[in-house]
Length: 110
Image (cartoon, rainbow, N blue to C red):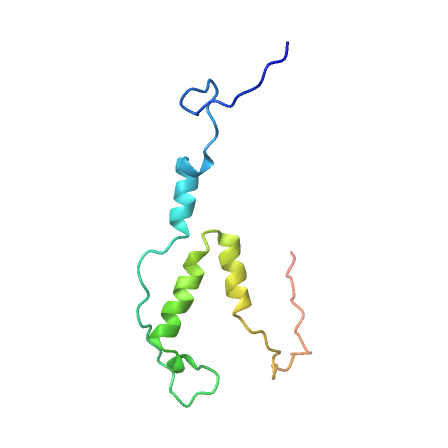
Protein backbone atom coordinates (compact mmCIF):
# COMPACT_ATOMS: atom_id res chain seq x y z
CA UNK A 1 0.00 0.00 0.00
CA UNK A 2 2.52 2.52 -1.05
CA UNK A 3 1.32 5.73 -2.68
CA UNK A 4 3.44 8.30 -4.38
CA UNK A 5 2.73 11.90 -3.49
CA UNK A 6 2.45 14.11 -6.54
CA UNK A 7 2.46 17.89 -6.31
CA UNK A 8 -0.45 19.43 -8.14
CA UNK A 9 -0.50 22.72 -9.99
CA UNK A 10 -1.60 25.82 -8.04
CA UNK A 11 -4.78 26.03 -10.11
CA UNK A 12 -5.84 22.55 -8.98
CA UNK A 13 -4.66 22.78 -5.36
CA UNK A 14 -7.12 22.91 -2.49
CA UNK A 15 -5.07 25.21 -0.31
CA UNK A 16 -3.95 28.51 -1.72
CA UNK A 17 -0.22 29.24 -1.61
CA UNK A 18 0.96 32.46 0.03
CA UNK A 19 2.17 35.18 -2.31
CA UNK A 20 3.32 38.07 -0.09
CA UNK A 21 4.74 40.03 -3.03
CA UNK A 22 1.23 40.52 -4.39
CA UNK A 23 -0.25 41.87 -1.15
CA UNK A 24 -1.29 45.52 -1.14
CA UNK A 25 0.92 46.36 1.83
CA UNK A 26 4.02 44.78 0.29
CA UNK A 27 3.42 46.47 -3.07
CA UNK A 28 3.08 49.84 -1.29
CA UNK A 29 6.35 49.21 0.52
CA UNK A 30 8.17 48.44 -2.73
CA UNK A 31 6.62 51.51 -4.35
CA UNK A 32 7.64 53.72 -1.42
CA UNK A 33 11.34 52.85 -1.76
CA UNK A 34 11.47 52.76 -5.54
CA UNK A 35 12.59 55.46 -7.91
CA UNK A 36 10.05 58.21 -8.62
CA UNK A 37 11.86 60.18 -11.34
CA UNK A 38 15.34 60.40 -12.83
CA UNK A 39 17.83 62.60 -10.98
CA UNK A 40 18.20 66.25 -11.90
CA UNK A 41 21.23 68.46 -11.52
CA UNK A 42 21.05 69.83 -7.95
CA UNK A 43 21.99 73.43 -7.24
CA UNK A 44 24.70 74.34 -4.76
CA UNK A 45 25.19 77.88 -3.46
CA UNK A 46 28.67 77.27 -2.02
CA UNK A 47 31.60 78.89 -3.77
CA UNK A 48 33.99 76.73 -5.76
CA UNK A 49 37.05 77.49 -3.62
CA UNK A 50 35.35 76.11 -0.51
CA UNK A 51 37.45 73.13 0.54
CA UNK A 52 34.76 71.34 2.51
CA UNK A 53 32.04 71.08 -0.12
CA UNK A 54 33.19 69.48 -3.35
CA UNK A 55 29.73 69.24 -4.82
CA UNK A 56 30.56 71.32 -7.88
CA UNK A 57 33.09 68.66 -8.92
CA UNK A 58 30.37 66.01 -9.32
CA UNK A 59 29.32 65.31 -12.87
CA UNK A 60 25.83 64.39 -13.94
CA UNK A 61 27.14 60.94 -14.83
CA UNK A 62 28.33 60.43 -11.22
CA UNK A 63 24.94 61.51 -9.88
CA UNK A 64 23.09 59.23 -12.29
CA UNK A 65 25.31 56.25 -11.41
CA UNK A 66 24.80 56.78 -7.66
CA UNK A 67 21.04 57.14 -8.21
CA UNK A 68 20.88 53.88 -10.17
CA UNK A 69 22.90 51.95 -7.59
CA UNK A 70 20.78 53.31 -4.73
CA UNK A 71 17.41 52.51 -6.29
CA UNK A 72 18.53 49.09 -7.48
CA UNK A 73 18.16 48.10 -3.81
CA UNK A 74 14.46 47.65 -3.03
CA UNK A 75 14.81 47.26 0.73
CA UNK A 76 15.04 50.27 3.08
CA UNK A 77 17.72 48.64 5.23
CA UNK A 78 19.88 47.93 2.19
CA UNK A 79 19.45 51.52 0.98
CA UNK A 80 20.50 52.84 4.41
CA UNK A 81 23.56 50.58 4.41
CA UNK A 82 24.43 51.82 0.91
CA UNK A 83 24.31 55.44 2.10
CA UNK A 84 26.46 54.65 5.13
CA UNK A 85 28.97 52.95 2.90
CA UNK A 86 29.42 56.21 0.97
CA UNK A 87 29.64 58.51 4.03
CA UNK A 88 32.87 59.49 5.69
CA UNK A 89 33.05 60.34 9.38
CA UNK A 90 35.64 62.78 10.64
CA UNK A 91 36.46 64.05 14.10
CA UNK A 92 35.53 67.54 15.14
CA UNK A 93 38.56 69.80 14.80
CA UNK A 94 37.40 72.60 17.02
CA UNK A 95 34.89 72.76 19.83
CA UNK A 96 33.30 75.69 21.58
CA UNK A 97 34.52 76.33 25.11
CA UNK A 98 32.16 75.15 27.81
CA UNK A 99 30.59 77.63 30.12
CA UNK A 100 31.74 76.50 33.55
CA UNK A 101 29.93 79.15 35.57
CA UNK A 102 26.23 78.45 35.26
CA UNK A 103 23.84 80.54 37.26
CA UNK A 104 21.71 78.36 39.53
CA UNK A 105 18.02 78.73 38.97
CA UNK A 106 16.13 80.28 41.84
CA UNK A 107 12.64 79.20 42.67
CA UNK A 108 10.39 81.61 44.49
CA UNK A 109 8.16 79.99 47.05
CA UNK A 110 5.42 81.68 49.03
